[in-house]
Amino acid sequence: MYSETPQNSAVSSKGTVMRYLFVAGAVPFLILGILHIVYTLMDERRPRRIVPRDRALADAMRASTLVLTRQTTVWRAWIGFNLSHGLGIVLFAAGLLHMATLHFEAVRAAAPEVVFAAPAVAAVYFLLSLRYWFSVPAIGSGVGTALLLIGAAAAYA
Image 1 (cartoon, rainbow, N blue to C red):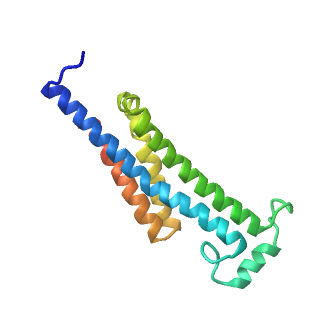
Image 2 (tube, one colour; image 1 turned 45 degrees about the vertical axis):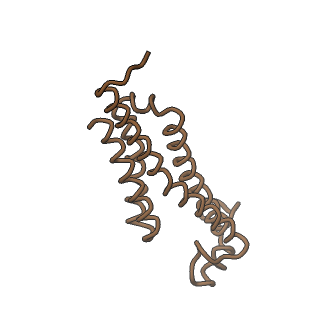
């Protein structure tokens, strides 16, 4: 039977903090991924969000095929890339939420490489957003990365 000792209480408290930080770190990625998918689906019919401001360029994307293949247009590839990108972010966040809520003790007991994998992937998204995207995904992925990193570090504090 489990008895509450100061040492057990500290371990339990540390695990609770780490769990909440992992959940909180997943939320910005989940929101950004869902928004990316929704905006892309909306843009397929009425382009207004994740599209070029120059309407002529969007029209050229619809009319041009890729050098790689003539089986799709640049526009269809653009929509597909954006949908798969959003799906990847949603799956990353969903995996984090699943681990943090249902299998957290196993994650916490795992090797440091496993614990720090989530903040490492999040950091890649953050760096990509700084280099290629704009402020909203940079802020969201930066906050998520920081929370995940603090949560992972809390496992070894």
